[in-house]
Each structure stands twice: as structure tokens, then as C-alpha cells.
Image (cartoon, rainbow over all chains, first blue to last red):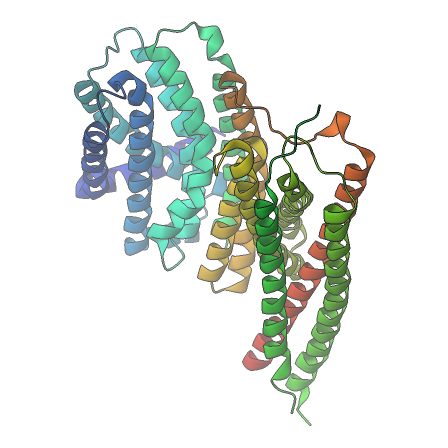
Length: 226
Length: 43
Length: 240
């Protein structure tokens, strides 16, 4: 068990190091996130829709699309270098392989979210002093869910011709429940609502994570088997 | 005194026509594809 | 007379032809049945007072939603069974069910707005059934796009099975999300004559329509499965 985990971390570290060297995915995703935030601000009528009303949706749409860009790039880079095939030839247990890939993707997406969040605070003038821990927690909860699905779908998409299109087409329906939950919780956090009002949504996020991380991990071996 | 039901017959017709078109259209497409793939190699 | 490699495909093509023929018979019966149901709905079922004639769209809308959901569930279940048993016929069936499901989902998604417009003045409502079917539609399309993009048949079968199972498990979460959303943002109660006060003539017509739509699903899937068998037979004889 501990071996598997260590192996996963090694795999994840390899991916992260490779990405840190080229920086392409992180850079494109971050710029993309910033642009989306800017567009959200200019695309609304300030007299009709206040910044605080729009804020949760703007934040989460940004996170969602930036995450997709990040995950897409990470698999494309890997395909270009044939790295996945090399790993498959080695006797690596598939569970560790999935965990490693997922951790690496989580690291990428978390990095993009970490950059997008301060930009969000800046552009939308939101006071996050009390809500920040809650928002970070919610972000973690929601991100784990769609990164798990994105990891397995990415592994599939990379074997098709239109990988950049296939991943979003497959992944977007699966991002909706975590997105809805995250937006609902975030808007309540920003309005300083009591925890009881968010419990239903938080439970939805948690159950989604448990179900889909497990499912993705189990199904991964069917995707990468030769 | 019960009121007259609203005059929504046009929508009903539209819906039935659209549904019928989709179902029959799909049936025809299935038939055409079946014919094409089964016809070849008939010696 | 073709050699040994030719014998197998001819037999399979014959089988494909038989399957397609059976499917055509079932579908034709079902289409006639739906015609009967339509006559029942238009001529022999009372008009609903608040909605007028538009309410009769109900007898198309609900059964097509049911068929779409049935199609989708079977895609997921067949996928799961395929991963376990590795029987290629399961994959063939899943592909057929997905395509047929798209047709029924399209009927549901077109009749839905046509019904909603005169009743609520808006083309779209995010009610549970419409939203779910919209998601089914997207999942179907993604599933079919993936199948078209993978050329190795074993890989295609495996990938499709995974997407099918995951999609099926997504359905309860979509449902839950919509339910949670609506309890917090109540929307006008759907003006459908739902369960308790449904007059028996309406119930009867609905049941007839549902049975016929289910039969049509079976018929269409059978034809499409037969086409799949024929494509397989063709590929094998081309390769062999």
C-alpha cells in the first residue's frame, strides 16, 4: 500500500517536474483564467447585475475552463513524448499510475486556481476575509471530483485524433454537479450565510468525489491496458 | 361557469409533426443504411 | 464459391439480414401502435381545461423521455457487462442503444419546448426531466463521438464501456443537483396532470403510448444491431 503511494508520488513528481520545465500548460491556463475574469467583468451591466451576484459564477466558470485547459495540455505533452507508453511497459500497478496522474493534474489545476483566485479578488472587489478558508475548502472539494474524471477521460482522449475537442466534450457534463455545488456554496459563503444552508450542497460535492474518484481509479486499468 | 380551454392546437400539431418526422426519419435512415450494407457482395 | 475465409462472413451476413428483418417488423408494428396511440390521444382523450390541446403533447413527451432513459441505462449496463464478460455483442448492443437513444432524446427535447411555450410563455425550463434529458443527449453525443474517434475495436469497446458506466452514474447526481436547486429556487409547478388526479382515459392513452414507444426502442435497436453485425462481418471478410 505504502509502496503504491510512493510510486504514485514519483509518477506525479515526474509529471510536475516536466511541466515546470516547459511551463506551457500552466502559463496558457493562467492567462486564460485572467482573460475570462476580465471578460466577465466587461460583459455585465453594472446597473443590472452587481459584482457580488456575478462573482460566484464568474469564479467557477473560470476555474472550470482553466482546469480543462490545464488537463488537456498535460496529456498532449505526454503524448508528444510517448511517456505514457514507457510507463505502461514497466510493471507499474495501474492504481498507482492513476493516482500519480491524478495528483499531477491536481497540482496543475490547483496552481491555476491559486493564481486565478487573487485576480478574482482584485477584479471583483470581493471581501474574502471571512469566506476565504471556506472557499479554498470548497475549491478543493469540487476540484478533486472533476480532476478525477478529467484524468481518466484525458487518458482516453489522448488516444483519439481530436484530443483537444474530445476531452471537453466528454468531461463537461461531468463537471456540472461539482460546479453547481461549488457555485451555490461560494455564493452562500460570500453572503456569510450559516453553514446549515450549505450542507446539502457540500454533501453532494463529497459524495460525488467519493463515487467518481473510486470509479475513475477502477476504470483506469481498462483504459490503459494493451 | 368553466372557462374555455386556451386555443393551443397549433402547438399540438407542431409537436406531433416534429416527433413523427424525427421517428420516421430515423427509421428511414436505418433502412437505407441496412440496405446499403446488406446489398453488396450479393455475388 | 469463396474459400474458407469467405464462408464465415457470408453466414454472419445472413444472420445480420435476419436480425434486421426482425427489427423492421417490430418497428413497423410499433410505429403503427404509436399511430393508434396518437389517434387515441387526439380523438378519444378528454381535453385538459387549463392547457387546451397542447396538453396532448404529454402523450409523446413522456414516453420518449422514458425511452431515452431506458436506452441510456442499457448503454451503461451493457458497458459494465462488457468490461466483465468481454463479449463483443454487448458492445455492439451498446452502440445501437446509444444511437437510438439520441433519436428519442431528440423527440423529447423538441416536444418539450413546443409544449412549454404556450403553457409558460417560455421555450425552455430547467425542470428535472428536461434538464436530465438534455444531459443524456450530451452524454450520448459524447459517447458516439468517442466511438467514431477510436479505430481499434477492442479499445473502442473498452473506452465506450467506461464512458457509458460513468455517464449512467452521473444521472443520479444531475437529478440531485436539479432537485436541490429547485427546492431553493422554486419554479412554477409543472402543469402536467400528474399521478393522483389523472383521469383514467389519460392514463390509458399514456400507457398505450409508453408501451408502443418501448416497442419502437426494441425494434430500432434490433435493426441497428443487425447493421452493426453486418459491418462487423464486412470488416472481417475484408481483413481475412
